[in-house]
Image 1 (tube, helix red, strand yellow):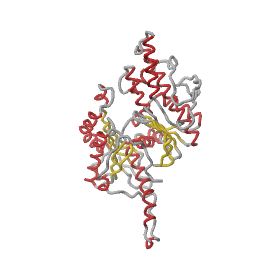
Image 2 (spheres, rainbow, N blue to C red):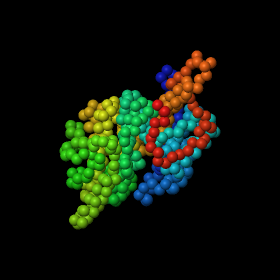
Image 3 (cartoon, helix red, strand yellow):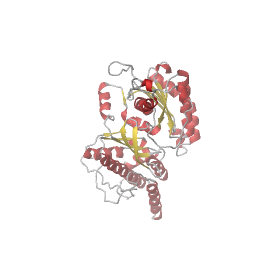
Image 4 (cartoon, rainbow, N blue to C red):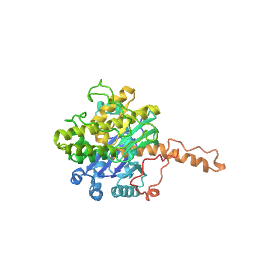
Length: 425
């Protein structure tokens, strides 16, 4: 597919590689928006027997799959050679160190051999930019995707909710973030996995809980809403467009925008033990479905309630939800209803971009190249300019200054550091 910028300039195409956990992924993205290819080799069936990701097995599978995945992504995008691209991007954290190393080392080798810029990308920033992507298919579908993807209106409120992260981030501009809150213990996706394991529903826990909850009664059992003030829940039908939003009463103080799901997981365990003492099998199909439905609703109430509170506090212009848990149907329906009442546009990536993928890494790399590099270097250039150069033209802010691939060959990985603003502004 041939793409050009407005005005006829060639599109900026980036090869992106993502191996932060158990998905081996590669993609080619143009101008931070167009997904030209997106290949993912999943390891779910391999890790299902363990009930979770086995890190050593994951890294070995990445080694086996990554060359084929990258070659297929290039072929799908009609890229004959890596040198025909504009840059190479790779996730360098957070994630499993062994898995990250596989992708980082391949990206370093490709960058060194081709001389292309190497762009390290924070995995969480990738999830944020999954909201800016759309695929180029039929004109009607492409138009619909553009209208549903994130706009250039800031500030935007980002809820990142996945197996390893639950974070609220205020996005003030491209590549400029203010961290508002995060989970104090378990992430929402991790809690889904652990509760699914307690109920023996299978792995991964998110889809398993959602499937079971469809036949469950969420009102049969009451579960706590962690870090939320007590309050009577408003009765509603999740699928009814005219139903009222849930009653949300966020706490105030230092944990206003933080989350906690460890206690909710323990509440499910205690509920199951109580039922067993009363002679009820907590894993019986209908009982398990009711517990799953109550648990799912509790998580969604907390996520939507705190996000809505932050949206009000910071007068945001749009709300974006991303990460693997953003694929949850109840979360999407509840958020759509709630933010429609508030008059705020809600953006959620298509389902295939919710879980780990490389297209989101390519999008983040494009915006980081375009907005971050020039902002970092321009003040330094002015500070170090010699008197004789006083009349020289300043570095344009929209012209990124690219480091050489050789400058980044020492690129390392990190396993647990949070998303940070690296623009220096």
